[in-house]
Length: 394
Image 1 (cartoon, rainbow, N blue to C red):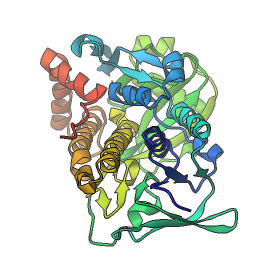
Image 2: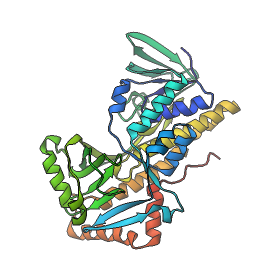
Image 3: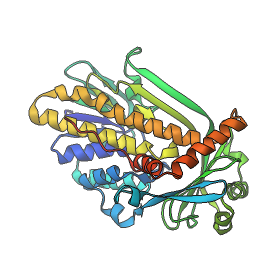
Image 4: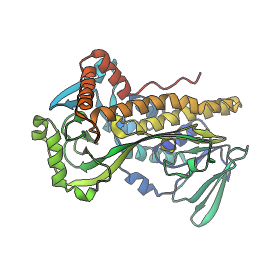
């Protein structure tokens, strides 16, 4: 089998890249080790930056997003029991974020992929890229018990942190940067109305909390918990009681509770590899970088990588000059490190660290309050939260 680009991974990054390439007339094949149902079962973030929404519109997959997505013109911070609203719309001349679940983004992209007729192989095992530094790379895998070889020009590794793409790069090529945080997020999903119309980030002596949502009737809440904690330690009753203890009193009194649809604990880490390319293999999204979810940057950063790779591949095929592809890493990494910094700062400013003394804690509180007391500080927060501009190719 022959194509121009093989995409490893059928999450939102791989599907969006396939959609954009197909619309540009560039043939592509997607291989995914899981089933389509499994991909759709993943519970992930749902805050889309302005640039991400614009990119999904460009890809022709935003119809349902525009009908069902919740446009948020602000975000709230709860500090010392008081809620303070950051007016994104006012600070950024109309730019804002949209709440629309990653599962729904994936569902829309899957429907577009099916409509396009471009091939996707789910439940592909033993996926392996080959000849990455040569002129004729290819990917092999097992599909329905038979070996499939896909010859191509380029390979996009959209298969996440645990995928085969990054692991196919020889030792010594990549430089890894990592920060592991000494706590995790316990998340609970429930069919209850959200605690507020917009997200609330909570800084509290008992630990961080986040009130989020998926729709007007489905909520997602998070609590900071110790590293190594277990979901089994948290009954629904205990979760709701602890959340109420961390929320401002008025918000806690209005909180609607209910049975959990899903509970899970996610460890928090920052991780980046450089470079993001090796020969004809390009790493995209979680295959190259992970950020803690505090700044809502994970999916947005991944789709930013997709945007850059699509534009570079489009230029290479149209011009016949592939040298522009050598700029992929540099084009992505400046924006990635800016988001890593912001996510690290949000995590540091809003969480309680086990080794933080009283002085450091008061400085942490003062720093966050100083930003919220200044329009310049609020604008800086808003700019990073809504998403920094995509880089120009030239």
